[in-house]
Amino acid sequence: MKSDETEPPSTTLGALLHASQDARFSGCDLATPVRGVTSDSRAIRPGMLFVALRGHAHDGHTFVDEVLARGAVAAVIADDSPTPAGPHVRVTDTARALPSIAAAAWGDPAAHLRLVGVTGTNGKTTTAHLLGAIFRAAARPHARLGTTGNWLVDHESHAGFTTPFPVELQALLSDARARGATDVVMEVSSHALAQARVAPLRYHACGLTSFSQDHLDFHADMEDYLRAKCLLPGEYLRGDGIAVAAVDGQPAAPRFLAAARAHGARGWQASRGANATAEILAHEVEFAATHTRARVETPAGPLALYTPLVGPFNLDNVLVAIGLAVAVGVDLDAVSRGLASSHGAPGRLEAVTAPGVAGPVVLVDYAHTPDAVERTLAVLRPLTRGKLVVLLGCGGDRDPSKRPQMGAIAGRDADVFWATSDNPRTESPEAIVEHMLAGVAPGARDRVIVEVDRARAIADAIAGAGEHDVVLLAGKGHEDYQQIGHTKIAFDDREHALAALLRRA
Image (cartoon, rainbow, N blue to C red):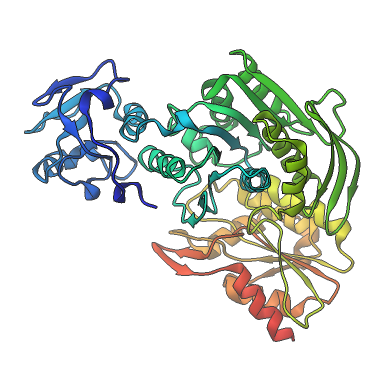
């Protein structure tokens, strides 16, 4: 759903700007009628309010006169912008004003919903899907907003961003409420937190799955990145809310929980057993190639856990999901049933199989950070009977510092490392691969195969694998495209893997 294609209720400028104490009106007033809000000049229709935003590529202020001429009732502009020829409202910061304007335009739908936010470098999508499955088992109509798509009670739609921008976000929440949703689980990215996209939402519960290097092309450094993550419990969690964080091997978790406790909310630790004081505590853990079992202590009582997800980091995600579910009042029977039925998110250690082909085991995973690659290989190594074959690329126009780290990990932990492309974007694919290879230890170079063409690399890696080998296609996961230059082409690792397996048959 695109927010600008739906019709919000009629309102007034005064109702939309009630939270902007510094608003100054010119050519319009509090009683001016408004029908709809947008920050996209292309979406303007007569009667709408236009909010001019400054982005990396475009400044919405350059389109103000155009949108007014096309029937916008007024434009919200920044203090230091030129004075337009038509009605306008000046505020100090249009980006900070937009979220509350959008919420007001849609009648503040979040006030009628239980909100759960999930953040973390890795694990957000899996945890959100797990919580969605728990809500389904509990017969709670719900919405799930995140990387792989937006589920709205009874249908799924495409997601342009992990966390939608304010106008679309409020429209989605309004749609979910209209469809009968009682609960919403959202993936909340560090970008969205730093940009205050989720203001003025107040979450009933929020979770941190993991924290490791990523997005340093956006954040100044790791401290800035962590500070953004901690805004979720520090600014957007209700005072009576609960924050949950996976704590084993996660030094950032105490900061996240402390941010919640600083304003009176509660903080729950989730542990696989290393922290005996954790509120969500797993013991008698059994990891297998096809499932995980454990006994889990929770503030609501003990739970017998069975999940098809495998590995310690997936257990972290499961424990955070349990904590969040308990925090919003889901009974433990529904929690158990939801987790037993859920395979998590698409493209997260997703198996690709073909009729009549016994092996190799082919898994597609979204691992695209050093931490995610290392943790995924650590999970797969003890489950691999033959060779562990890893096919990996790195994205272009993104943090280049992680490329040699990811190359080093794949070169060290894989028996065969296929170095290839991911989404090169405007960078040279060959140069990106060279950055990855720079991290490979000299003694591991003989285990590296370079094939920049990802389609050919997938085909050859699967064709050359043994029946007992495990082939991990890492980096793209659920993505169904490859971006080369400024062009997106259809490309799904799962489709290429299936075709390669069928050729073996």
